[in-house]
Length: 144
Image (cartoon, rainbow, N blue to C red):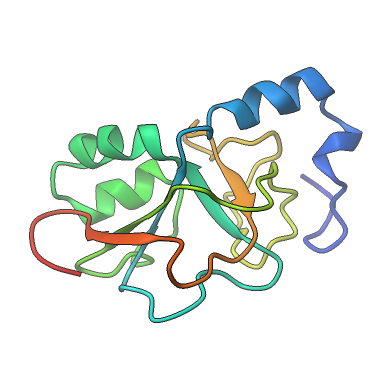
């Protein structure tokens, strides 16, 4: 945690291969990310974008109960990150699935090493998702 963003080591240097494989196995059913608006092209910067197992997205949406601020807290996001009407982006076949190093553009001060958000939600990073490889839906009621 004391190592600054941009200089943090690859998780493979401090996590066992068994742990890496077990963690990434949680993402076998596809991945989901939440955004403040529907994307119009490639999702994520060149260094990758944070995602969670698709299987957990429905549970988190239910826990949030329509409260965007609560969803942000569950995801360890800065307040206001998801805006007023966030969208859910499902990526059935992501490329480059890996445990986040904390060097990613989207890593905030709440990032912790080991593949989980500060709130204990499994997370990973994938390569940027190209148009046609993802599905956008409203997170709560309404439209993206």
